[in-house]
Length: 295
Image 1 (cartoon, rainbow, N blue to C red):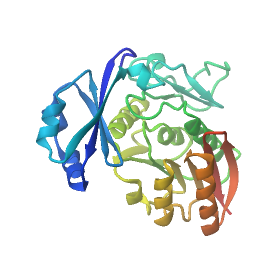
Image 2 (cartoon, rainbow, N blue to C red):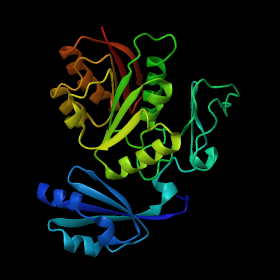
Image 3 (cartoon, rainbow, N blue to C red):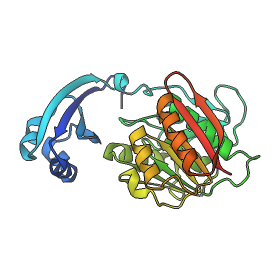
């Protein structure tokens, strides 16, 4: 998508679970036409993304219980700070936007690191953020990537073969874990838009034999067997997962998406329930991310 592409974001309130369910099952493209780019939910709101203005009246009249709350108009590069970003380099891992990587194919298997000029042991990733969160540059994502490098370092022991990425967004963490050595990775998100974009990134990076992405609520995958669980998500979802046992009996946990005070709340409860030890914590005045390992 061009940086100057005009976006219109319709913020729509769903009156109840029934209206949200009807919205989720509707053929929005048939209702709104080709300008529709995608949508995702946050609590009881749906955010509908279009290229310019679209027929929102047709959507509101076709599904009972919907109310237009706000309309946001901006350019793509104002929405997505990863638009046309330069390659992101974290240790031996390089992440390229498609404009740097060439047409629909990742860079060579071993590629010069564009910042430090040395060869990387990992094939670079190509990440197109589209309209979802993130290309890798957010502080929480970078912290999770650095933790992944530690878990899958050549010096590490017992690196998990199976990884579960909850709140996968564009799939950057799921794809990175496969690049680093995970043999099977499942990415989950409750955003149709995110899953569509993650699957496009999966195809670009040719990792379909190791990674899959599914649409759904994180809590529905609490019992999924994986040695590593990645959760870059809000505190309320973390606490729900903790209550459902999603963080029990893992080799490693990478937890992020938290304000420092929220992280203190979560880790206090988690460490009081399970025998994990703190391996690393990256913290600033806005975000706190944790790497925990089994005793």
